[in-house]
Length: 235
Image: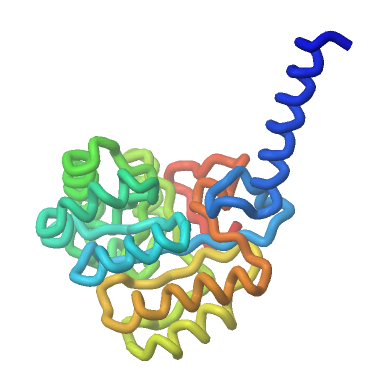
């Protein structure tokens, strides 16, 4: 066997080992295959806010990707540096409407305005147009779906939540998520309430101890692509 051939075999072995490490867990959003692994995605609504910077620090320290569904009027322009940081650090940035109305209870033109204004704001701040949205309170219908399809937005709901808008005790928030999350879960949290961010480290550690891998929404559904207009609650 020639020296060149031995080097090539060694290089291929290293690549294979790296891939296997990724599929076994590895980095939070490494190329894990969620069709076989126990994957969970963390999502945060309503921000950015006064606690978001601390949350980003926690996610960076724990090496965890997340999705942020942001409100256009107020939060995005009040904390543009945090929005840019989300995008720059590889988190998914999604549309949560302009002022948080129930999109099912407003005329189609108003639902469209709510999403278009936020699309423009987030594109202006991050340089990229969002492809994900979360309807306020999870309220959606065919009318909302049609607007989202037109704007190229997939609708992402959830199947695990902490009710952190109601209970601000970090331990309660942690226990609710660890009790409700399962394979393929989309976890709903809010980075605008005082108890949520303090609960995140224990949530991350608890999920990992239970054998879950924390991934982005894109990774959770891969190799499928999230289609504009469609609703996703669970992988």
